[in-house]
Image (cartoon, rainbow, N blue to C red; front, side, top):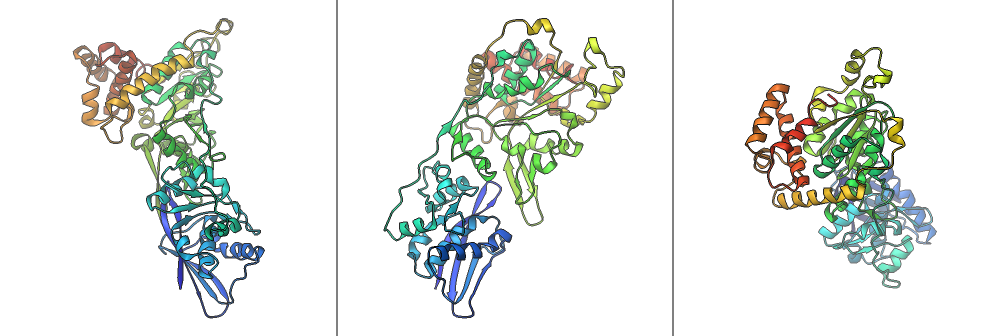
Length: 502
């Protein structure tokens, strides 16, 4: 008789159903696993055997074959231990086969039979709900998986507890979802002295998810400004929190099953590799741009990143997802992030500081900023020069609006956009609008149109630049509470596009 259990194999954030078939047949004693397993899956037989021995369960002296179907799908990770063990237990009559067949399991086994948490419980719970199956996972994954309301999650601490549950001797209660964390460690915008124009750019960027470039001398406050951007963004919606948490689950970053409503803020070092930024490595794990999905990706010292790494950002910025191509699979991750880049104006950093002028200006600045290609620079909606702060400014009391006050205006603008794009698939904010939809929602008045056309001709805006100005103008109008895009909105959008950080 062939018994069956079910688990998943991960392809990006997609969890594909895998049938674990187990057959115990006469022959020389052996335990083999087939179906394109990797090293971790192949070693499951030793962990399963040791765990069963620790519970005084003896395997029969027969030939045990475990097949992972579909056989042409690569199987990676230690989470196959638990479903293999359950299929084997069903095959030797230790648990009811029909109960195991209605279950989707994942988890790693210790040699003493305890269950070790694994990554990917949240996507697995989504698949279990879609397949109308019970999810069996380690106790450390239960709080994470229980966030899927449609899934029934059982999370034992040991394999023995799972056996007792299926035998009906000691039923386990369904796992409960972890806590929701929100508003932790956010910094106030009022702590930044001066830099009112940069603060305005932050507000616009937050309201419409527009990419922002900050250029200024060392110590002018670029990093301080970027680090306060998460405090201006509205909390993640339930849908966005689930999307983001699925990615973080695959990366093993969900702490004790808790889902955060705060938007992600990723700040990779400029020595980060291409795989670290866009994803890849063993198992094609998500990179920084996917971990920043629905949040902020802050890249300080932007020109210091390797040129190939920067160029890989061009396509994800436009499409909102990234495809990691491998010889045996293509893995797709979402990556709709708000990119904030910070850079010095030149290598020494003081080209724009009149008190400490660069001796090689303007050649030094031209050479340094040339590390960022024109096509990539064209993708920044807002470009802001951040001047040095004087000592007299530092002695002034805090001024300007607090993060909470700016966040209220941003949230109001986001609500307007949510209503505007409620029927537009894949469009949530103004930065996503394109084509006829953009022409419809961001058409300026006659004076604004005339100004935009003259600026486009005078400064040689590309077609991409022209449309990005329209998107920013639409966001400024939303912050202003205006139903239409008018000349002042276009003028302010153009001021952030030309003559700044060029």
